[in-house]
Image (cartoon, rainbow, N blue to C red; front, side):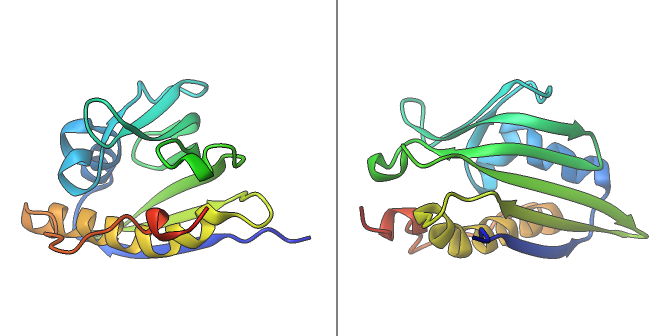
Length: 155
C-alpha cells in the first residue's frame, strides 16, 4: 500500500542562511509557529513547544546541512489520540535562486490511515506562509481565528 506524502513549495525573498536560521532558531520559530529546541545534530531530539509546559511535537534530527537541507521525524505529542501514531518525516530543502530561496517542504512516511496527514494539509500552508511573511516583512501573519488543524481531527 502506498503511503501519502505532502509537498509544499514556496519562494521566499531571503538568503539560505536567513531561512535556515528561521527554521532552526527558537527565537524566530516562535514568532511564526512554535518555539523549537534542538542542537540540530543528526540523532538529536527536536521538540516544538506550545508553551513552557506543553510539548506539541517531538522527533529526531535525521539530516542537517545548514543552508541546504533539514530533516527530522514528526511525532504529535499534545493530542492524546495521535500520540501512539508512528512518527512521520519532515524534510526542508533550500535552493538559492538569485534573490530568492526555493523552499520545498516534504512531509511523508505517514502511518497507514494517519490522522496526522489530514491535519498537516491545513497546518503547513499556514505555517510556511507565516514564515515567508516574517522573512519578507519582519512580521509574521496574525491569526485571528487560528485553530490547530490537528485538533479538529477526531479521535
